[in-house]
Image (cartoon, rainbow, N blue to C red; front, side, top):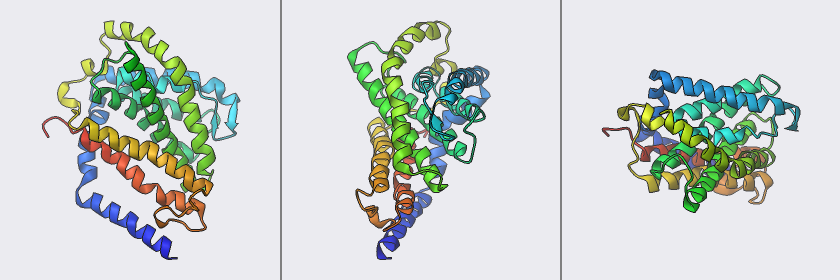
Length: 292
């Protein structure tokens, strides 16, 4: 079909341009602290601590499924939006690992792969926003609270987009239903309970010298070169991708956005979101490693 043809050509063009500019090689450098943290014993300890607490809060609620075998009521997401602010990449990895541990208690399956990376990038978005805004990892003002709420919304939407897209690829569950449920799960509890938890924990974590930027070697942390650009790309890729996925999945655009998947909503969602995922990953280029 002509629409499918143009859609595939558009995707190939985006992928080709990214490959030509070696965006993935640069992106790995931009995500430097996600890799270099593993040589720091205290960061590894904080990863294990986050994973243990996240799993401990997650597992008891496996008995309250929202979609049996897929997801459940998850108050544990409060950890995903607070610990990465304190522990940075250790918090992000800890949430991803803790989520995988929780999957062994009822929801382990092919979708766990996307669940791992969805939760990893949820934590990544949280700590990168805080780093880009150059804020202390606490909430002292209405402005801090506002930024926290925005960070929770974006991180929750990004996580939902990645997981719902992945399960659409696997043919396990429609994007619209899962994307909506995961977003609400990721956002509602953290918005209300996250700020009190941050205020409670920050003085202690600061006293114990466990703030990630104090723990890691400065040379192992990517700097914030273009915060406005990076944040804009995050919003376009994360929240924009979720919104477009919902529109395609529900048929509000007839699954024709960019010519993808006429008459085949699943195909439309799968191909239609690839550019948004690429844009989100490209946001890392605004946070280059030191020395670049």
